[in-house]
Image (cartoon, rainbow, N blue to C red):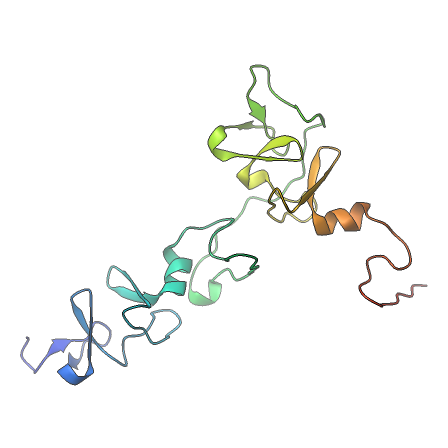
Length: 192
């Protein structure tokens, strides 16, 4: 124990006395200082995640240091547009969305030699990055709606003329039109 009565707090560097001490990763903290570095929530042994000398709640730790990309961090059936910018996390810049430029709408648009070609970008699709949908092989990053760019799954896509769409964009573009369609339950639309 250093001179002054106790260990120094990992947050405020002041002396931590026994009655107010919380220990984590061999360091001492005041109970009132044992907070997530980002969202300032109180932590305990079941909710703390440590990165070097910083402590986080599991949610903020996952956003800052966890896996990034499609399919991570949302949970089943959850849609979140939170990029984490409010937490000091810089979002990754995605390549701009561009619709398929492959004029061959065949389900078997392939290079000679048998390797699959992605209809969206025209590059070879290797087994580790292959997603099959709409009768074609796609890169995971290219497996997006042609209209809105939303990431797709085999259960959430609709295809037409060799292109893939989310069910919402497909319905708007190719679904039934006219009175009673697409306006929601009981809504009336009047246009002049």
